[in-house]
Length: 339
Image (cartoon, rainbow, N blue to C red):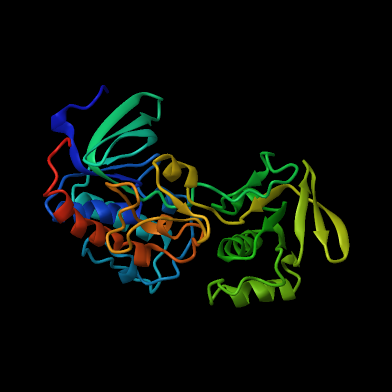
């Protein structure tokens, strides 16, 4: 549990054990370097917290990493298939993954970083590494509404499954994929669903096989919808909306505020990484190598796109590991251990 010795220094430490983080560790190992992954949750923690019956928008081969085939009987794989696939990839490459370790702080500089973590019992650990990759994604940090009652236990920012809400009045806030999927699933399993969206209609990026479904449920009155509307307050037994027709109070048991998520900007800023405030808070990094403005710290996955979280997915983020590994071949070879 104590401080690591010089013999414990790894070439690359990856913060975040999602698909992109796994790909970075795999490519580093294939290039001949040692790699360690740490994650505050489980392997592919964000995917694990997706809705239980979620289906990916993409095809299996576009989720592949490490040149390992993703075989699925379905044209579009589901969450459980993806989790099984990434477990098999981690096992195949014998990846060194420390799950349930939360990074508290990072010390040192290029060639000699120390990453301080806490395990799930609050016990301190420390890992030394020559280079770092930040691949923390964005799904862990919801975009809060900042309204009265948002801190009530009835308010959820993640949707998992419908059974606990059978027969209850449920409000879904949002107009994109997660809101549409949750509203449909809840309605199909007996919840009384109302959807609220600040836009004039469901977002155009809703998956093409889901959009007509949610629109038809709304048109038929099976799911009630209030567009051009906002939730202004949440109470124990009701919610208050601002609608084009005026203020409206509805009976309510649970609220799903599915209004999106954002990267942990404070964490990467704490590492010294500069955010481009004129460019949707995109962190400064070399597009050819993905090394940030802080020497030795690389960025991978959706975090590269700043607030534009709809630009990078597993399908393109999985290639970031190759860019980083290519740069490591030069950078690490020329750099003595513990510099």
